[in-house]
Amino acid sequence: MKDSLAALPKPLPAAKRKELEKVREIIVSRLSAEGHDYVLEKIILFGSYSRGTWVEEGYVKDGVTYEYKSDFDILVLTRKGIPGGHWLGLCIDEHIDKHPGI
Image (cartoon, rainbow, N blue to C red):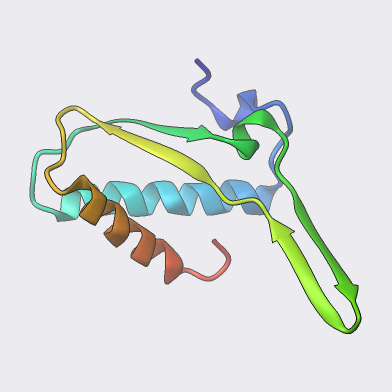
């Protein structure tokens, strides 16, 4: 298993690395903000970004702009389970949505 973004098959642009770092910061802060002892074990990037097949494309047809942009697929592992983990995931999503450019 790779443990660094440098090991990805397709190098990430600096802006994407910055976005992933911000996502990591949000995950870590939300886990600690819940007031529980959720020890973060690992954050795993999977999907198109881990395979090097991510895309950001756009085109205009008949005056309408269409965009296709890969999202980040992330799995967060903690030492013990998080009761209501789905709820915490939604909270993390909300915090990420508040940051333009992610």
